[in-house]
Each structure stands twice: as structure tokens, then as C-alpha cells.
Image 1 (tube, one colour):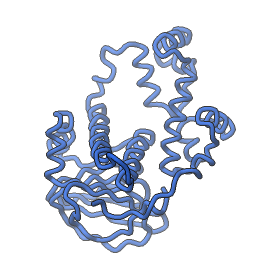
Image 2 (image 1 turned 180 degrees about the vertical axis):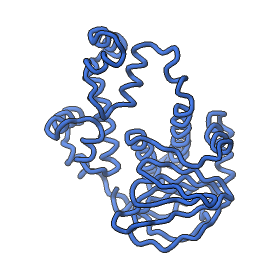
Image 3 (image 1 turned 45 degrees about the vertical axis):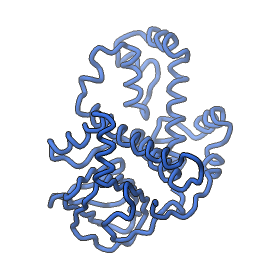
Amino acid sequence: MKKNLQTAFQTRQYMLTKDYEIYYYCDRDLPQVALHAHDFYEFYFFLEGMVHIEIDHTRYPLSFGDVIFIPPKIAHRPILHSRELPYRRFVLWLSDAYFRQILSLSPDYRFLPQYMASHNNYILHHDRYTFNTLQSLLLRLLEELHADQFGCRTQAALCIQNLLLQISRVLYDQTHPKAKSTGLSLYQNVLHYIEEHIEEDLSLDQLAAVFYVSKYHIAHTFRENLGVSVHQYITKKRLALCREALLGHQKIAETIASFGFKDYSSFYRAFKKQYGISPKAFQDSLPKRAEHRSPL
């Protein structure tokens, strides 16, 4: 994450704008935050640190990929246990009126708040590659709020809607496991398995062992549906996820380990062939942004 996208932390717990505000924080020495509640919705995306969050007088440990959904009038506060690691997170605030406006667009948006309220649950856990998708949407939203071009406000609104829909979709899949596999073809089930195990060995032999079919049948099914080999699909999928991680300024070594590349040389060759630039040059080329200010 570029330093110039960061916001200096302050204890303000009210919105300066009518609809939404988003912040990226990276701190080591924070003032103690008192237990507090808002009259707006807060989405909190945890990246790094030794932190618990207290919600309604219950404390929860946090790990990378956790998303906390805090409705209005719910008391909460972060508790920082160590200053050795940086405390990194995104915070998105949505006014009650703006959130209700989004909910009115489709019943799909209502699944998240209804499920969380009925189960008295506030924390959603995400694996690394799913969370990197959310992080890329958050970065896009920050970029749009700094953009001086036609349609940036409209695009920012679409980013927020897409972000909420993505969170809701992951929650739905987590809470309806049978819905993901019932009636799906072999091809669809293999696609889903690849999505869920992208960091593991995904050779044809491994996939054949998982689905109890010959590797030649899987290879033929992929060619017939996608026009590419299983290996080509997995490589492109991994590269796309790596690119998103690099956009989030994850270290190259961590990216390789996260998405199944066995060594740097194979990752380097594949990345340069796909995008025409080396991983390091790509990350170094990311444009600098203006200092973050509160959205208007």
C-alpha cells in the first residue's frame, strides 16, 4: 500500500460527508479508543496487527481477511496488544440513508444485514485470495475518490455496490454449502475446486483423484468448455490473483507463496508473458496518488 493512500488516524466517530467515507490506516502507536457506537454502518477490513475487537462487550481475535460489519448503535472498539507489528485496516462508513438506498436496489443486498442480525454475528472470515478481491475493490474506490475525471462519483458508487455484493455472495456460499455443488456438472465442480484450492497442487493427477474420473476426461471437458487446458486456466487464474495482490502492495515473495507458484523463476516467466512486464517493474510502476483527504 502506498503511504500516500494512508490517513492519519484520529478519534472522530462521526461522518463529515452525507453518504460514505473510506479510509486506509497503518499505525503502530494508537491512542486508546473508547467503547463507542455510531449512527451509521461501519465495514472494517482487517489486514495486519495483533488486535482484538470488542463488540457488545465480547472480544474477538482478528486475522488477515476478517471483515467486521457493525450496524448503527452497536458498541465496539479495537484493542491493540502489540506495537511490534503495524496495525493495518480499511474502514468504510455508510450513512443509514445511503445504506438503505443500496438495499432498495435489489433483495440480494439485504441478505447480509438480515443474516448478521438474525445470527447475532458481526465477523466474516475470508481466505487470502477472496480477501484480495475485496482489497482490490477498496483500492479502486479510493482511486475513484481521488480521480478528477468524468463519472468518478458514479464509478465510486458502483464500487461500493460491487463490494457489498461480493461480501454477500461469499457469505451466502459459506452458509449454503450444498447450493454450490448440487446439480453442478463435472466442469463446474472442477472450477469450484480450483477456486477453493488455488494455493495447492492442482495437477491433472490430483484433480482426477479428487473427482474419481480420468485426467483425460477432465482435460477434454475443460477444452470443450473453455478452449484452454487445465494448466493454462489455473496459471491465468493464479496470475490474475497475484496481480491483484501486487496492486495491494503485498510483497512478491508472499504473493508467490499465496497462490501456488513453486518458485520465483516460474512466476516471473509466467507474469512477464501474460502482462509484458516483470512483477517488480509492475509494482514499481503503480502511479502515486495524492494525499488522502476525507471524501466530499
